[in-house]
Length: 309
Image: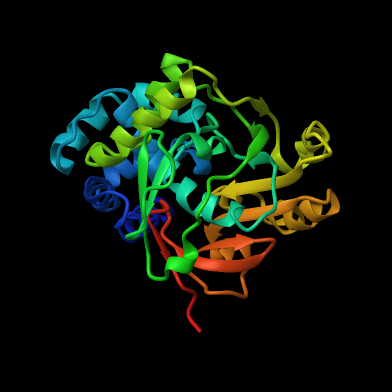
C-alpha cells in the first residue's frame, strides 16, 4: 500500500522534470523504497519536501550518482540529514527569475522602491546589476551574470533596466551573499546536474557580495506594512513575489494582494497560476502585475510566452 510520502515523491518525478533529471531519478527511487520512506516519515511533513531533502543531502556531500549509490549514502548519513532537514529551509535564489521581473518592472513608472517577500539572500532584488538577452534582442545591461530569456513576441522584452533607488527583502530566515556558509547553502539548493544554474548563481553572488541587499527577518504578511513604511514616499513601491506564495498558508495567500493594494503599492508575481489566481491558466507559471497576467513563464524565468487567447 502506498504512503503519502511515497506518493509525494512519485508526484515529484513529474514536478521536477524541467528542474533536474538527477532529482527525478532520486525521487523515483525514494517513491519505490519503503525503507527510505520510513526514514523520511520521521520528519515533520513540511520537512519531507523532496527539494529540501535532496538539497540537504547535497550540502552534506551526497554524490551526483544514480539512486542506488545515493540510497547507500543517504541511509549511512541519515542522522545528519535528519538534523539538517529540521533546521534548513528551501531558500532558492533563482536569479533567472530576474528576466521576467525586469519585464514587469518596465511597465511601472520609476524611480522604484523594491520590497521582495521570501527574498532569501536578496539576489533577485538587484536585477539592474545583471545583464539580459531577451530572444534576439540586443543585450540589455553590462553586468554579470548574463541571463537569457526566450520570448515569442518582442513586445514582451523590456528596453531599459529598472531604476531602483531603495530595496529591502523579508524572509523567515534571511541569508547573506557575503556569508560563505549561506552561499554554500544556496549552491546546495541547485541540483548537482545543473552546472548552468550553479555558474549563474556564483556570478550573482559575486555581483552582490560587495554591497549585499538588506533582508530582514519576519513573516511576509505580518511584517509587510511595517517594512513598507521604510520606503521613501517619493518612490513607487513595488512588492515582489517570485515563487513564494506557494509557501503561504491559504488564508495568508488570499489576504496578501489586498494588503499590498491597501499599502498603495504595485504587485509583481511570478507564481503558479493556481497559487496566484485559481481562476486563470491552471497549472501554469504566470507573470502578473497587480493580479493581471502579462505572460506565461517558465518557473526559472528562461521563457516568456504570449498568453493563450
